Image (cartoon, rainbow, N blue to C red; front, side, top):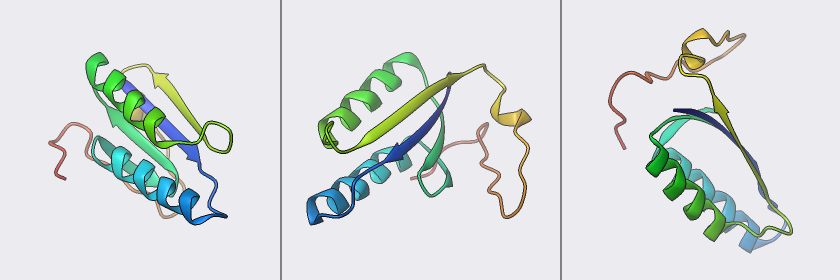
Length: 96
């Protein structure tokens, strides 16, 4: 399955800055950063459940927001980029 993950984490406090780094680290472990707070992820259903649980454990639900969009398979390959865009190798291995 293909997921598009976007997040907005409060960074006014040191705790918020820590959460932001943790959210980014979790997302980097499973997907590709395509913008500062946007990741493209190719995973299976069990990986998605683990990802969501990890993110839920990190965020403050009163101050932070994470959106996960499930896309049709092949959507990433059809994406059009304008400007300085990253072309993640979704079909290749993820090297962490």
